[in-house]
Image (tube, rainbow, N blue to C red; front, side):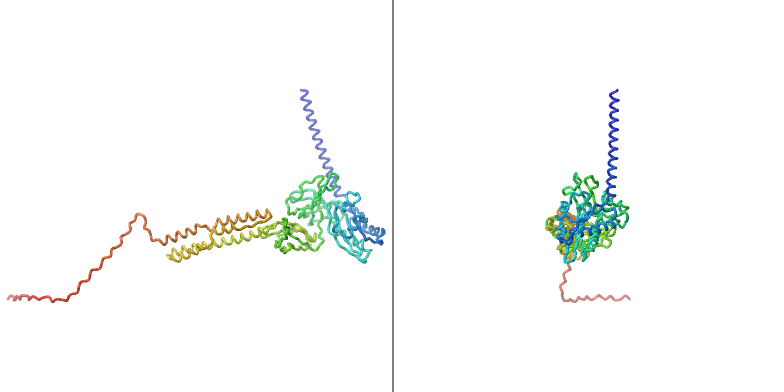
Length: 520
C-alpha cells in the first residue's frame, strides 16, 4: 500500500513538473516572439552610403567631409529616427569597378568588402565620374538583409556644390522599404513594416501604404544568423498586394503564378521578407520564351491584363521576337498578366510595369496544342456539315420514294453514298500526328484527339445509308400479297367470233296463197 502511494505521488509530481516546464516554454516562446517583433518594429535601419569619387587629387578628404555633412543632414530631415546612417568612401576593392561597371557588381564582392559589420540593412553604392566638368552619377541600392540589388539610377550635375543634393535625390528614389511576413493563410498574408514603430509621419519614404505591391524574398540562415549557401530565394512571378494598412501592420493578398510559393510557417532560421516595388522605368518589355531546352521566342501569344477586381482586358500579342511592351500605369498598381494561346490559359504573371526595363517569362510552348486545336475545330465543323447534309438528303430521298419517283431517288442516293463517311474521317484522324516536347502540352493534345474521336462516334451513323438503301429497294419491288390471302384470277379474254363469209342474196320463192271466197 505504501509503495502504491509513493508511486502515485511520484507520477503526480512528474506530471506537475511537465506542466510547469510546458508553461515556462510557452512563456519564454511568447517573450521571445514579442521581443523579436519589438526589435523589428522599433529598431532603425542600419544604412551605409559608400562614395566612389573620381580618381583625382582634387577630390580630397574635405570633399568627402562636405558630402558626409549634407547627406547625414538630409537623412536626419527625411527619415529621422528611422535611419541610422553612416557615410564613407567606398572600399578600395570596389571603388574602381563601381565607377566602371556598377551594374556588374556582385553581392559576394560587397559582402567580402564589409569590414566585419553585422546587422546592416541597406547599402547605397554611389559612383561618380568626372567627364570634363560634367559629373555623371550612378546610384544603386543593395538591400543587404535580402541580398538583393536594385536597379542602377543615372543622374548628372555640372556643379560640385550640387553633388550631395543630386546623390540624395537618387538615394530616396532608390530606397525600398522592407517588411517581414508574419502569417500565411492561403492567399491571405499579414506583414509588419521594418522600423514602423519609429515612423512619425505618413509622408515618410519608409511608410508602406495601401494598394502597393511587395516582392517576397525567402532567407534561410545558418547557425550564425548569416544566409546559408544558396539560402536567398527570390520568388519569381510572385507579388503581395497590400489591401489594408494599419500603422506598421499590413494585410496582403498573394498574387502568384505558382502554387504555395511561401512557406506557411516561419522558423528561427527562415526569414520571410517582402520589399516594396517601386517602378523606375516608363515601361517594361515582357519577353516570352518556351520553357524547354530550345528557349525559342513565343510569337503571337495573347496577353490580357487584370488589375484588382476588374475584368481582364486584352492588351495585345507578342511579336515575332516574343516581346510585348507594357507601359507603366499611373497608379503603379499591381497587375496580373494572363498569357493565352487560343483558348488555353498558359500562365499568370503578376508584375508592376516599370519595375524593370525587361522581364523574361518561361512559358509552355503551346504551338503543338494550338495546331491540334485548329485541326480539331476544322474536323468538328466538317462533322457537323456532313451530318446536316446526310439528314437533309435522307429527308429528300424518302420524299421521292413516297412520290414514286424512284429514278430521282436513286440518283440522290448515289450522291448520298459519295459523301465522306465516319470511316473516312476516322482514317484522317489516325494519320494526324502532332507532337510536343513539353509533356503537359502533349497530354493536352492527346486528350483533344480522344475527345474528337468520341465526338465522331456520335455522328455520321453508317446505319442511315443502309436504311435508305433498303427503303429504295423495297419501293422498286412489285407489291407482295399479304399472307393467307388468295389473289384473284385474271379474267381470260374471250376471242372475238369469226366473221361470216359474204354470199349473194337469193330471192325467196313465193307460194300463191289459196283464195277462199268469202261466205255469203
